[in-house]
Image (cartoon, rainbow, N blue to C red; front, side, top):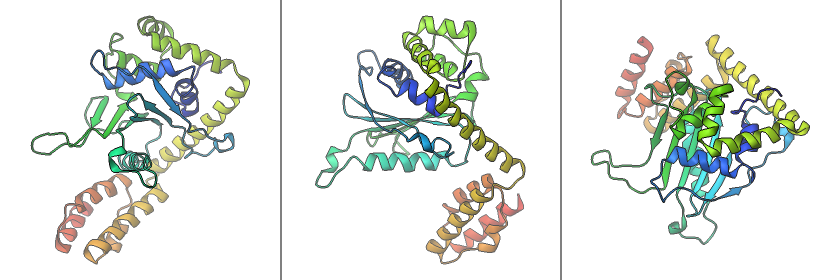
Length: 301
């Protein structure tokens, strides 16, 4: 294992999701959150999200890093390498499961704690050039924050590579580290950032373990298979499973809300991104007539 793919989710968990790597994780999260002096994270409790090695070849295997901060906030860090075209909805779904899963029988809603998701993406998702997007719940007119319990970060690795990055910016340094920076650039950011230097120390131990190398390579194979599957399906204009699932979702929604499915017309749309846009537009439709007009407009594009 001469080089290491740091966004291999198995390697990421071993580097950042271990007691040895806690210093690295603290440095990374403080760079993401940009908290004011005196309010930085100083300690984390690692919560076990271990995975059985036999599932490492499962392309959908989840190897999240989940921690609890001193104020009992939950922080979930996820790597998503291949674009399945649903990261926004998947993120909300898993955030909701994590948030709601805090309550046990008999507990009060007041016991719910802030829940933060940090998504590290190996693909471009947002249209603008910013590499860091943060979402919270705010009033659409005044911007007033409802509460701080929902916070979702998206970090797009491709975008930081396309720009002149600043080694003195902690977050940009971390994103370049995750982009598998090597050589003098890596040495420079490690000298400036003790947490990155710690990550490299943990990484070196990981590299030298024969067992970890085998498990890492199994996970690399699953990642390559997933990327090839998604890229191949997109190139062929098929992505059959995703297309059919999205079509079914739209048809069920229309039937439940309007008593009509427009099934034949929906089935004509075979592109997953077009289906996503269509579904978003249909959410604004208030009548069956508006549904028909929306579908017709999309089919003409």
